[in-house]
Length: 111
Image (tube, rainbow, N blue to C red; front, side, top):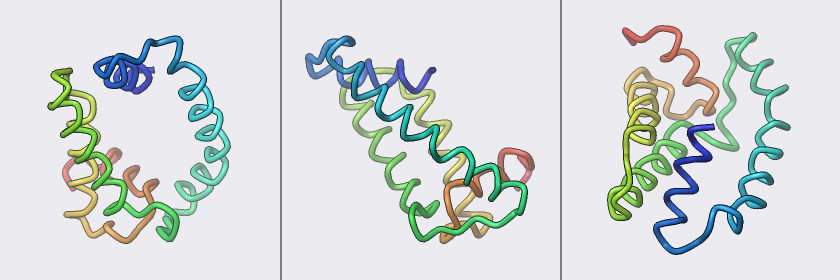
């Protein structure tokens, strides 16, 4: 839910209303929900294929979101926290793994 609020603030900084953004956000939530079965299986199997969305690629996206948020003058707490998880996952050797490998650094914060 915080991601929705952050994204709404980010697009709002360019003049897009929350209502105009809502259908796009809803589509994203629907798309993300379809990934949950695969994500759960990958987590349970401790196998994180990265061919579709590697940690390195998603970490670069997080970096861009932090930058865009900074430029828009909105709070960067949430995207900075997400970026920090990607940075830790890369440092732990998960750069080529899929985004679900963030689970490993979330469950083991000392990694």
